[in-house]
Length: 281
Ligand code: GLU
Image 1 (tube, protein in one colour):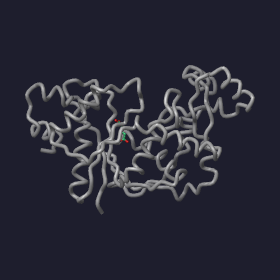
Image 2: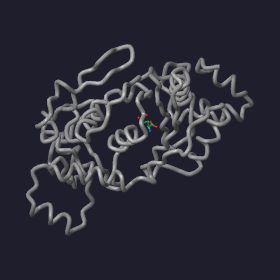
Image 3: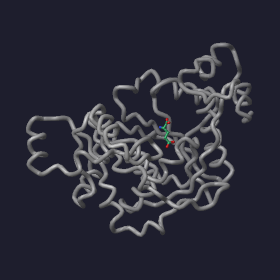
Image 4: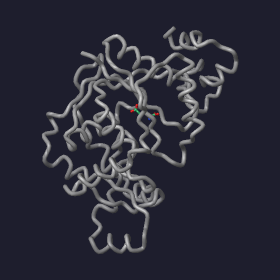
């Protein structure tokens, strides 16, 4: 099978060795199977993404010797696509507006000490789920900012959950269990989409059939698999790889300046030396 893989960084900081590892695995898998390696910029978060980081991604990857298919998909160029998906889900009663602030949610969770805990933290306690139409209209009138949440109960009502699963490399099929996540946000207050919605749609529209990314994103795949079912999108296979850590066993992050490709480049390392650091020389 020819793998269509992708590397999908968010331009919110400089790339580090962890990114290089992920991108290398994705490129290798495409190469070995005669497939295609794609680059996608996940820049839906206008407040945190910067053009200089976007430029840095191109520079670092080119310097390291990566080649990718053009054109590169930039998520911020496709906001209407995501808004159309939201409308489709909304028409089926699968979405509701949530006017809560973070503080209100935290307070409600603290009050009701039985709030279920999902893989991404405590599930939303459902404050806005039961709002009457009148309350909703009033909030709209007062232009209260709102996010759009998936109505998990309605979403799974007509699905045979036992048939939802995804294939994870070295593990086999994993049964999809989206319930513990609760009513996840599908469109944030400041943008008509969310990570879950845009990543699921983009992988499908770009024909990605094998997703390689860090194991920190494995839990999210349960939501992505559910969205694939709701939006009738194909299900790729997955490989959630281990995360690269620093010398002290801590996971690398964008704050680890010494491990960024840019700083290694500036210290005078050669591309093959840097590639070897993640054992891809
Ligand atoms: N954009 C995400 C990140 O930079 C990766 C998303 C994914 O690979 O699914 O962490």
